[in-house]
Length: 149
Image 1 (cartoon, one colour):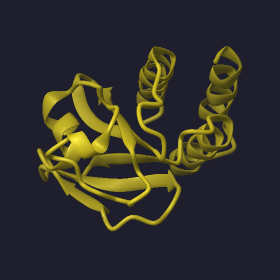
Image 2 (image 1 turned 30 degrees about the vertical axis):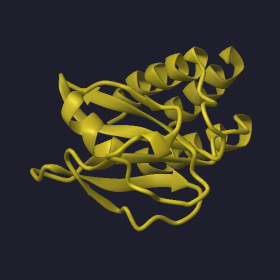
Image 3 (image 1 turned 180 degrees about the vertical axis):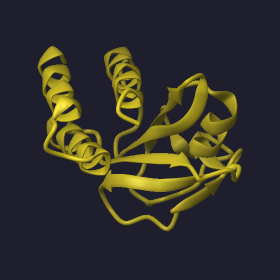
Image 4 (image 1 turned 45 degrees about the vertical axis):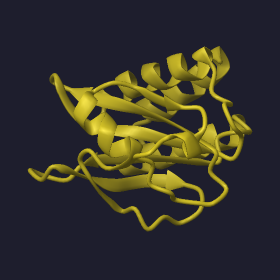
């Protein structure tokens, strides 16, 4: 994971790319390096509205470009301000289905100046794939991403 962190840091610190490009590159790197990350994307608070708007992502297209706070795993994280790991989405009553292939999901909030401004959302086609190491990496990444927002 330390090698991935180094590569993620170099993407985020690159003066050649704007924030949107950096976030897209982050999604690509995670998608390529971690085999069970099958959809990787960012959602951000949509202005003053209590909803999330889809940002850069890698994976199958999604209909969920806007997610109201409280709806689905992403919407719940927007309210709870806490990382949410779902080992099996079929056991989760408030799950928003993006793909029939999705079996598990992890969502980690991004804070800027104490405010929850967005999140990284990762879907997996494998039941219960996410490790403590994945969680730690993603929480570290969200802290790093907040510095470029």
